[in-house]
Length: 399
Image 1 (cartoon, rainbow, N blue to C red):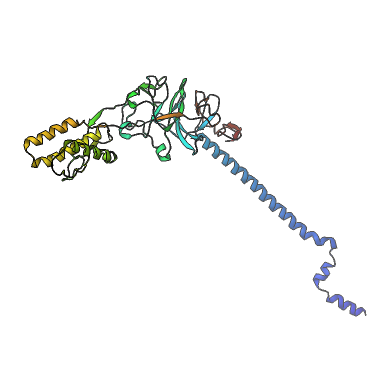
Image 2 (cartoon, rainbow, N blue to C red; image 1 turned 90 degrees about the vertical axis):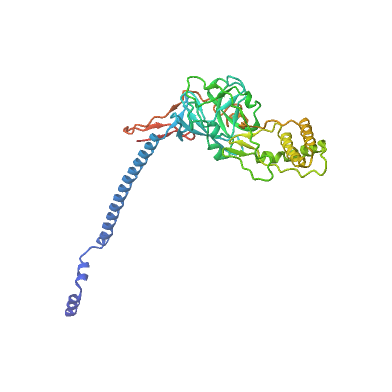
């Protein structure tokens, strides 16, 4: 029996004998070591992540502050932020966009800000000599007529394209009831109550002057004679010379009235025999950027058409009788000198209301002197207060 027990003991494996010498509680030792390693790994990852997040945060703050140092914001004397500069004019004044929310469609108006006034490219015109009364605005701007500025240099005048690109009415800065800094006005579909000949002054807000930029102004309403060489020429094609434009639309609108006047003159003359067909109406040519005036247009064109008809009929008439018809025509109608004139379309301008109070102008209540923010000190270590962007809470940034 003892021999069998010895044999069994001898048959035990080395692992079996080793386990027989280890206490049962020591079996958890391996799992405890793995948990410590996991905690160390997670701790290292968390610390690294926090360091990385702080570094990213500081980098974002520095970038934000750097951007603020580059961006220009304009505010008034009371600290009201007018807006962010989207550009600068030729006088280095910042320009901001004002969004007109009083219409069915929101429109932008580009306004320049100087230390004591608001500016814009488009001038406003007044009937009086001191920019008093209801303003008028010329729309659209014409490069040929408006390209010269206050210094007389071409290309610096009141020509802007932003409103044409928007398909919107034209906006302009005009005189406020107290003068400076100015009010914002908007073009209306209505015609100006004053004619171009009655305009005596204009508010040219971009003009660099001490005091109000109101100046005496009269429109150049001089006219030139129209070219009638192509008016009646049924046999030969005739084109307007270089520098002139055919007034096709105006003649087309008056063609019906011209035909009635022609028939009446032929009837009053009582031409013998069969009257030839009415000659074709050719073209009247006006210098570029001018428009044919309607004064005397119908009767004058009818006169020249009848005169052409008489030339055709007179070939079969005695010389004396043909002259009698010529004299009779001169007694019936006297042709006038057709004139071409620069077309000046003046529209009435209305005050742009404030979205907060319709009784106030959009720029009313903003008090000069206006200021632009300064760059933030990038070397400071403390938190610095920065102006809000016009809405929301005050923002803080750390350089």
